[in-house]
Image 1 (cartoon, rainbow, N blue to C red):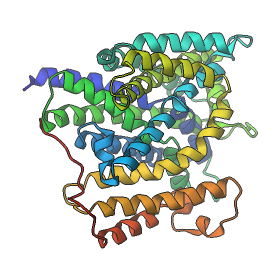
Image 2: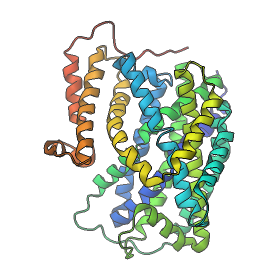
Image 3: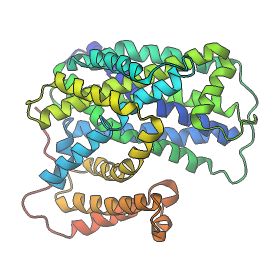
Image 4: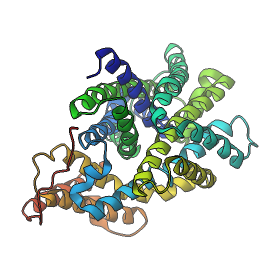
Length: 435
């Protein structure tokens, strides 16, 4: 057993690492925009946002802990081939193909171009992913590097912005405009961050670090991960609250058709003038770097197991960084356009399994898991086709469709139907270990 002092200090470090990896540039731009739209009811919007974002992400982390930090264990009720295919697709989406290149592209467009308009994107990509590779190449040190060094730097830069905004507000806060559903928009914004997906691979590397520190039994791992999750949640709660308030203080200003990223730039410029642009660059850099380091490490670790060690962890880190350099140069807009349909399909499937994994000890029929996934998957695919212009009217009329959960009732129905279809073979609960 570990001493309480060690558990406490390591929970703080792990919690800081979790906070930093979850808090990417996407998380930076949503809360201020929500605050601006919500006006005087910004706090309600913020609460809904933090529940849908940080709440679901932490739930995903704890589901992975229950599955011994293994994605394959959590998805095992779906069958060997489907679970492996889904695992690979998920890690590719939140890793080399989308999320990792996006961190570099976001840093370049929000943090570098405003300061150095003529800076070459390829050169920046080499610099950015060179740093990522250096910080990631030692897998056991990733969590400590993020938790001890990068997160404090991120928190300090965020604190400067938020404290300045609280002490010297940009302006008064406007009443909430008629017809604006604050709770719905807050929940949707949190849902759109898709941090549930990022939490799954991130937990892989965090659990590996926790295990290597000597926490081997489920009880010991929960003893570290639960307080770590609380630390991460508190950090996200405070930061999101500050950013949402900053956005609310701009609600009386005539900013035209400003978008989320533009509002963040405007807020920092209004509060700190030219220094604000520099500060924003630092915030975006540290937010994206911590996310890139965490995702690169977890992706390399995952694919190292997929290839049974035939390609080393270090080689995979370099391959992922090389892909990041190439893909990031297509720009944020192109990456988002590519990612949107993929994420819309895979998100409901993973969230369904995350929720069901908490009841895996009681669910003995694998068809409950499979039926729920099939129900969610069918509607998610149809919803994606609608977004791509295919006319399927009934999809948008399904219950909860207006808050992005059109798949929820079909997933429940699929699980119920699966309960009455006897599964071939043995029980379905994911296999875990208390070693």
